Length: 149
Image (tube, rainbow, N blue to C red; front, side, top):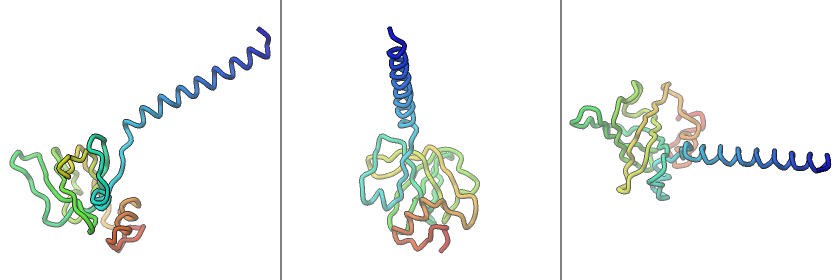
């Protein structure tokens, strides 16, 4: 085999290896990627019930209920335009309370509810993640991108 053909073969093999590694990495990341929804998104389009997603918004005042098993919490997430009932089993973050921002990670049920595996509460009184602030502003909640009213 000529030297020119060897270089061409090695170059093509390297490109093939890089393409294969990229394909494997993307397929692995696809399982870990979590889509983000607000309650308004849920009301306008049917969410995936078999994929892990994130639901973000505010915990509706007066909606937190501790169920009789002692570890399950039921509450409602709202963006002031729509509401989604959420059920979470586990220890809630210390900053989780009514009227505060929350991002719940989990899956939607066929009945239109949400079962959370993990809760993330906002860390400051005035802070709101830009994604939630922008989506709530678009839904008519009256917040700005900085998260203030």
